[in-house]
Length: 530
Image 1 (cartoon, rainbow, N blue to C red):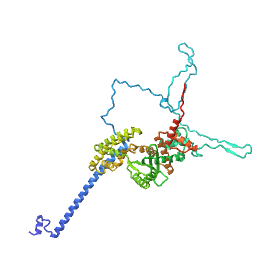
Image 2 (image 1 turned 60 degrees about the horizontal axis):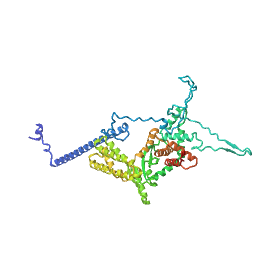
Image 3 (image 1 turned 90 degrees about the horizontal axis):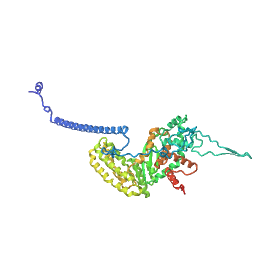
Image 4 (image 1 turned 135 degrees about the vertical axis):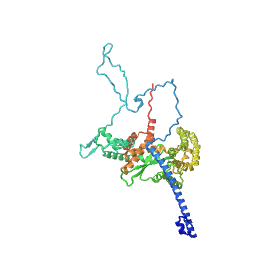
């Protein structure tokens, strides 16, 4: 049968029967290329599917983390074990009755005012009817009260003196010294406004509303804000002395937080940089997060250890400072990294990998348990504290061994993979503190000092000028330093302003605390002789 007949009879023809050898070679090459391209396309699609699956998993982790940040507990403390229980008191135990303290005993610093309640007419005896007399005895009770804030207008009348002989001279009594001469507000009110904002974190607009409810209407917030600028400029000498205390510290904590510049500068995203020692807190406000800010402060410092988070800006500052110190023959700065940040990452990973992260959290629980014992040791028992620190080394080594073994089993983009990579990549800096009992384990002290500026940022949103940013840095520095030294900020500012009026040198909260302690020690002791 011919080809036409086969086609007419619908007999299948081999697809290669009509092809030449050259065409068959070309056909097979095309088919092979098509299969290779198809296999590559399938591999790419499989890789894309795997990547999308991983991204979906990471997004779910981020969703859980964000949800916990918004709706979860702010504390990083872990729940206590269910098996633990306190001592159970038996039914026969009698609770010791505790005497309730009187208000004068609870609050010995509060002013005590005695009010005597008497009768206008002497009562008659209910037995014999004779008029009674005062026995001198009293039945006493106490309660705590408050006197609402009063706003007073002070009129200063400065007398003028003339010469009654020649009438050629006129002398006016000098005006009392003030923070800002000619201001509508007294020093006491400027301090009250500044402490209400930078210590109690109350916006000045709310201060005006509070004053209105106390009977003073029409108090302009803008002029009150200006009074805080005057106060900050007046006490700037104390702020500069704070920087001197910071640069003289052997161990420094460093951290930064965003600061909004609402107007007054082209950049709206500024940063509040915080540096602190044991007794001093120091802030600077800058329009950059560059490590040059930390480098500039560290260059002139005597710092030997810098505690911070794993931010490249601090690494850059340490490198630049060490290069300069090497040329001068000075000791280099060593970086210590915050273990609270490492623990925090494992705690976040526990949301998606509870079983895997639990080991690291348990190790950190034991480490911080030892650290609490270290902090309870007095300074003269440094060797005991160092021995406790050395007991942490096996715990850190166990975490490192576990992380090295488990790293390949987790995606580098997962929360668990990132936590282990973060821990392993900075292991030397995380464990440096175990070699010296005076070094800190984490940067929590500095983060606590930043809490008030962060709350303030959420309350009044930001500053409206560079002067406002500088005022915030000065006043927050002095207020937080007062808290570190357990000094009342209002009392400190009152005494500082008074001393500056008298021409005395400015002093920091730490110096003020030492002055107060010295005054108590040198006070004369009254001895009663019989």
